[in-house]
Amino acid sequence: MTNSSFSKKSKTWLNLSEAADILGVHFTTLRRWADAGNIECMRTPGGRRRFKVEVIVQFLQHHQQAPISNSLAVIESRLIDHTRRDLQTSSSNTEPWMAQFNTEQKLQFRQTGSRLTALLMQYSNRAENERAFLEEGKRLAGSYGTICYQAGLPIAQTVQVFLFFQRSILDAVHETGFLGEINDAESHQLYQRVSFFFDEMLMALVGQYFIQSTTHSMSHSQ
Image 1: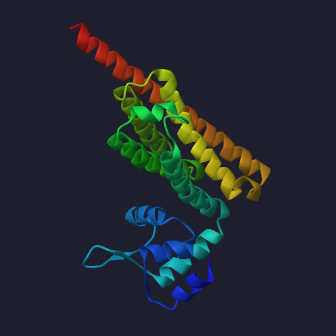
Image 2 (image 1 turned 135 degrees about the vertical axis):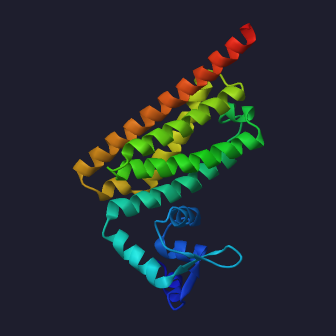
Image 3 (image 1 turned 90 degrees about the horizontal axis):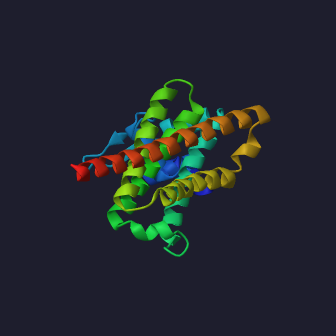
């Protein structure tokens, strides 16, 4: 928490950016938390979110006592920034598949990627409802397969797209130094869960790609 963040505590209500600054997360992460009901907020007549200082402080203190949960939130925030930067700087020279997507499809990738990241964080850190998180993640991963097929990518490049986003996630984990902050047992458990999640997502993506391909072939053979 920065000095400027401490000075904001003299206020009664904080806007979205101020509250996110105090919590040390990206404002989009806090917005998702608020919309999911994980942190209390109120809406102004104009629809703006406002957070009570006491609520933010209590939320911060609670998560400081739960380092894994807090670190995963930082990873999620870091990943959103990392993926956005990667997509902006990548070109058809560095990632040949980039040239195949139009602006709308790239936007779909960013939006779906953010939702998939949130599910990964929830799946990795929660024992309850893990099947629901996994199934929703597979549904979203399948949409990547649909987009790639519709863009005309061969299956090999479709897998490259998946690996691009997987690499962004792993880079975000590395940048936070998260694995160095937990013990070996916790680190191994997290590694296993993340690896399993990635495997399931890749299978869902490839499966949906071939469903699209088969459906297309059948429609043209009739």
